[in-house]
Amino acid sequence: MPRGAWNAARGCGVVPAVVGRPLDETELVERAKRGDEHAYGELVHAYQGIAFRIAYLVVGNAAEAEDAAQDGFVKAYRALHRFRSGEPLRPWLLKIVANEARNRRRASTRRDALTLRVTAESSSGEAAPSPEAVVIDAERRASLVAAVDTLPEPQRLVIACRYFLELSEDETAEVLGIRRGTVKSRTARALDRLRETYG
Amino acid sequence: MAELERDLRETGRLLAWPAEPDLAPSVRARLGEAPRPLLFARRRMLVLALAALVVAIGAAFAVPPARTAILRFFHIGGETITRVETLPNAPRLSPIAGLDGPMSVEDASDRAGFNLILPPKHGGIYADDGIVATYIAPQVVLTEARGELGFTKKIAGPNTHIEPLRVNDHDGVWVAGAPHVLMYFDSQGLGREKRVRIAGNTLVWAYGSVTLRIEGPITQARALALAATVR
Image 1 (cartoon, rainbow over the protein chains, first blue to last red):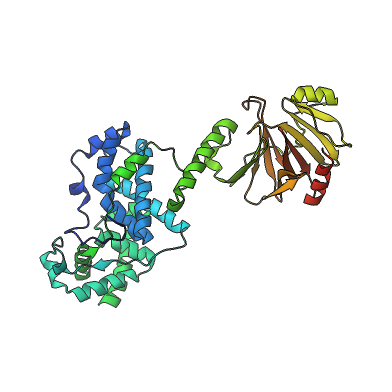
Image 2 (image 1 turned 45 degrees about the vertical axis):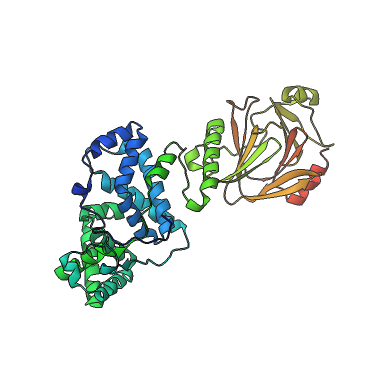
């Protein structure tokens, strides 16, 4: 797919960690640790979507996000021997990708404004809004995204991780490299602020 | 609060994200690569080349590769000048330190394995396999080394000035402004590595198969004037 093309939103950006983890993930990790590149490719395929979106949230540019995610997966492969079998792989992978994206952002002087748009529910067959979503009209959603976009960067990221990507508090803490308590307090401050602007 | 959080979640599910790339093939293609110390996407090819060089230098010259991201390098005769972020540890010594001597011109030539090119005025001659050195002015040392590539190596930090120029109608380089490290090796290029930290400025040029260096607390003009006497 060409860079810059936009997906219609899928029914869900990401599914909860436990449910979304492939059943044979532990076996794939063990094989990858032994040098099975095909097995690692399967793991990349499973997590590339969420990894790319996290990188995109951090760098604000699709091409940079793709590079960051790719580099993150390559680094993670080389660090697999340090990954403890039985631990959840997803937060570990996402943390490496997020670090890669942060480094890239620090190194880059250019950063596009984050442009997350809300799809019109009726414009795409892929969009599958839940009944609750229908209640919120498109205008309100657009203003909510705009409000999130104007949050201070740390608050914007924590809101995006928790609600747009639906990461758990623990995963958000791991990905953003902050403590769980910080995730809680930062989320609360961001919600207060959003309530002021969004109403 | 619950309503706002619900709105955020529902909005998140309707966001239009950039097209999700299929990373698995490109990641798998890179799994056999050497590790890359720098990861700026737009400079991928350059970075790969530098990574290979770091590994090569690490193996041949025992420079800790993790601490020496190479910023720039070039060759003059048998000398490789490399600019790195962090200088390796080295004692602050004269380039003559570690060489045998003083000895006669003939003995030095036999020991070094090439005919010396000396100015009219010089001090005692010190030599080892492939290299000779002598004082040609107070605190100014002339070093000559056999010209195999990689035989000698200069490592310059970020604050060291490196300027290509012509010396006696030959290609040369002026290295100045901050301490740098000189490493040199026996004729096999392995073992017997010597490292010295040089505080002075250095003029390097190649003359046939011999690489010459003038090092000391001197200006570029003074170094060029001294070099003109070495023919």
